[in-house]
Length: 253
Image 1 (cartoon, one colour):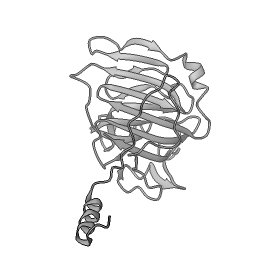
Image 2 (cartoon, rainbow, N blue to C red):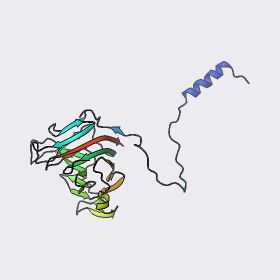
Image 3 (tube, one colour):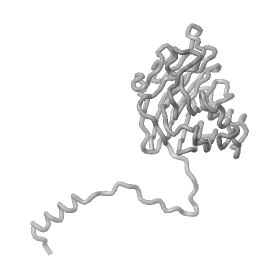
Image 4 (cartoon, rainbow, N blue to C red):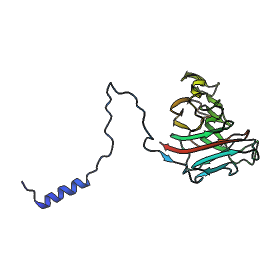
């Protein structure tokens, strides 16, 4: 049966106006399913370092520069410091998020990625405008501390590499379990580039390096735990060193 032209036009217009669902179909689990690795980033990650400039970042240019697509922090024999200093991303104060990045560090280097952090006064070097307090994914060239959760200028070591801990505020962090000994985990740290993945959800802080779980903190110390804050990367007081970061991406919840 032929539809009248007017009715046909109305039908076509209604069909065009109807919303088209782009959502993925709901996952129906099967007994045969197992967790799977994914390639690349999940949707929602945005680059926060463009690899061409320090746009959006603030730090002391004596120690920080953009070079060959990398965010470079370097201390030389002529620029030795007595206090840790940071370059800070000023784009937001993330609360719950995932952060991914790659780093390479010299043998004597000491650095870290701070998050949920704040800029604070430096009593050792008052001219240092870029001291921070907050959680840190610890990084060092000797592989002694890389992967630890360390609270800079705060409660210090919250979890060592290979540990899951609970922080309660009335005693040192409580060890809940282990992912393995520190030495085998250190063996997974590359001399060249390494991939960092930090996952922050509420009071649970997860550190992953090169696909290996390094540290998990459950921070139940409500009076002292930060709930949001700045992201920054560090050069540490000490001997000459160099650290490079690239491909820094953030997914905010």
